[in-house]
Image 1 (cartoon, rainbow over the protein chains, first blue to last red):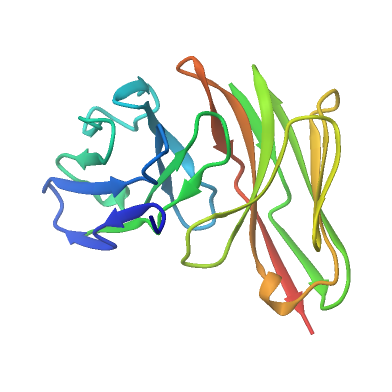
Image 2 (cartoon, each protein chain N blue to C red):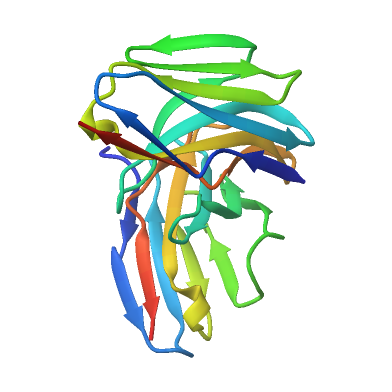
Length: 112
Length: 112
């Protein structure tokens, strides 16, 4: 296992389109997190899963954002009706319970 | 809620020592992480402090005082490659588990 993998690495989309990002965590990790990062800021927590259960989603930025982890392995983050303000780096991380989280390389989204 | 404060930017000279401070306020605390992030890359894990005191790991050390809500990251024998953003993250309660919440990061510039 080579770590957390995110796809695509870059995504350019037109305003109003839907986008979906995928994250494959480290295989033995039961916890998976999604963060958003904009320039000059730290990662902003969005949501997380413990196995297939989504335990916190109140910090998703709007109801246009949703995430799934159907079988407790990979996860997807979907943004519907994208807006220019959604342009950011979307980071996925995984961990064993409360231990340190390991991050993927991120998906950089540009909404034009 | 959580509040995490760290300086925005610091500069230091190659070979010197630098201390990056982090103060936090949180409801529910399980520990504090430090991450390093080079421009355009994912955060990488440096240290995790759960108990009060100093943890040393090579050129990097991290200190925690739970009663004061205070931590610092100490970097010794600075190298040019240490120029990066250093992120303080508090492990606090969300959705019934502890999840890392990040500060905005301290941009460290090491000059010759």
